[in-house]
Image 1 (cartoon, rainbow, N blue to C red):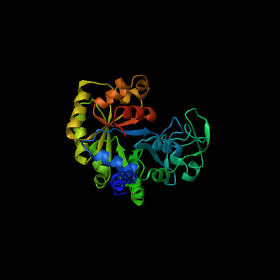
Image 2: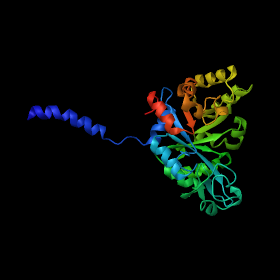
Image 3: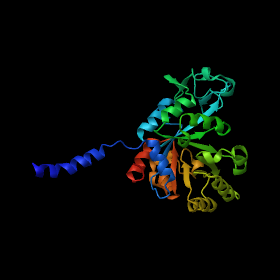
Length: 300
């Protein structure tokens, strides 16, 4: 009997240890983002899983999280009565059954509208969500990559602080560092801040260094065309130890190495993005990208 327990006890301990709850997904993502030595690539679902549900819908974000995406890109706009709603366009016409400008209508009206899918069909029981709905959906599960929200940083910050989620939102802007410092100098050090920079210009290094000095946690690099200057600027960011995000949604964002090309030739396209040192890839094909990265040992 003593020999039996001597044999079985280590197995029980290993089993109990393996049954311990894992850290929340958002906690893991934040740890990866702050680890300069990590080789894992974080996947950002652009407007959620919009191929499987209407873009920027609760279901699109839920699908993305369940398939293993680390970050969801969320577009936020302000309604006429000050509500924060999730919507990419300034108008409702393309993605909902309604019409008109978001800024001219109430949040109650906007959120009563059903969403259209990628084929423009109205989807039953899929309504425009409030930003707070999406915020709570992602709490402890995924990080939010905030888009269309530069003018709303303070409002988003207060809402995120209310739900203890400030660290779970990547506040994104395409403005230059001087403008960001002028508008949000008192806030920028308190939030995860991600500038969007078009690479290739003569003043790009200056802008990169200015954003890094402000405390950027990552830089979203837009690559209209691959040139020597672009490659030098990517190397400059890598040497600075700042995370690189590249979007593969369309050719002009990634030097022609986009999602649709990657489906046919993943190594030539997503592989190229990895070679540039990207530790975050924003994609319209999250399922395929996750499979590719997992096969490469670059995602759990």
